[in-house]
Image (cartoon, rainbow, N blue to C red; front, top):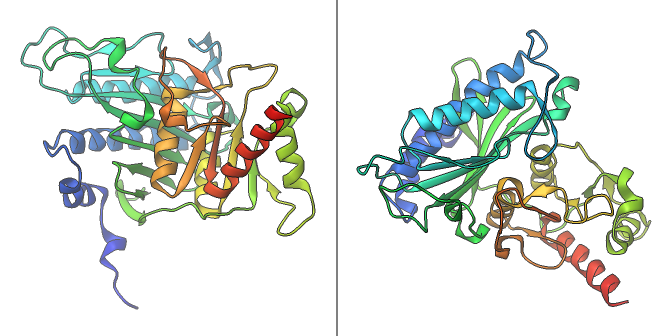
Length: 341
């Protein structure tokens, strides 16, 4: 058997080896990715013993989104914030589970941290009770409004997706993976639970140009705009390489991960129930769009590029179409035709 050193490269080694390809070489971003890796291992441990301890179910409260908070939502949120704060790496954190952002060390004039992190601590957490894969999503930006050494403001978080310096997700599934980009391709690392180390397992991940999977909650079909209804009918039509296969997990991380490997498109459009869409621009759509574009895919709101949207609030929602480039183009075509008809 031929020895392949790439298969034995740890996440830490990969970060060090590739740090020079990142345009900001202070090492701060590398330490930040390492902190996320540490928090991911802690959350992974709790997720994998969720059926054995009292951590399933809701806490009886709702978050700022108006959604029931799961116990693991709260736990994951606390662990990621705690890890980032304790390591004194970022100047600000915003979480999908928090009403507002958190400013770090705002009174320390020697505080030189330059990065803000936004985080969806446990995407798809409503599935945890039935043992379905869930995940964590994170984008990273450089502060742009406030000066280093001074408190961050909300405007430091309200940046277009095109300004991201890194983004990634952790998927807690049959195996736990950390997938991320710093703008130089997408790489995936699988956790070896025996020794607690992430190893490079999926180098330079790419969406196939075409796919045969469409991921959408068809239970909401009646509420979708006509363009999306027409596209779903197109996917179901027996013609050429169609009908396509319908696969919907209900966890963005899981659906995105499968589609990136096998080829497919994910849709969460506007609807009569959610006229602005359901997914959050800053915590979910922008980071997944960055990953998609770095992996030869595409992300759109149905008409235009997700990462060109100027956010106006922390918890802003938008429609989201993401996946194999040719499939996203086809969705946009149906949306335009419907709008013009």
